[in-house]
Image (cartoon, rainbow, N blue to C red; front, side):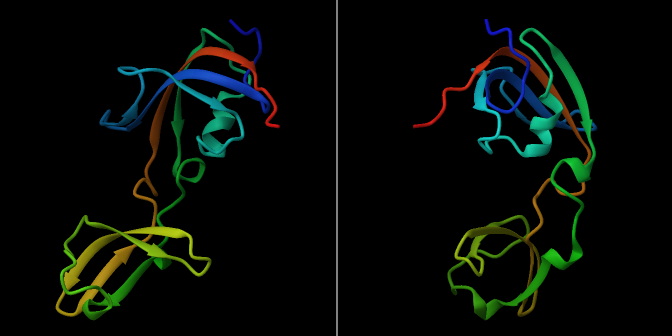
Length: 150
């Protein structure tokens, strides 16, 4: 077992659960194998990593993560209108369907169909967890120094 505290340059093995305030589970490793990640490798959003700093093997914690420290507030300017003809004729367009778009830099940008009315399709590009307060349960199993990448 490592005797290190979670910080930049450490590799952390942990169990975590992410839930809505009502207890509905979004994701969890508690019923699977623990996750291992290098702090700063972007496997976990930076704000979530910050909650772990200073924790050591054997510690557990529960954090209430407000939207601004989680996936941001819902931004109305990230909701855009498209014409039905912008999509392939055989594409299923109904509320809740996720569609992959390419942004100006050709990076993948997921959008979720919010509404379809006549020839208008409303797509929401906000993260699906934007605007939500989340509960982040953590159990630190081990903390070691990460091996530098060569």
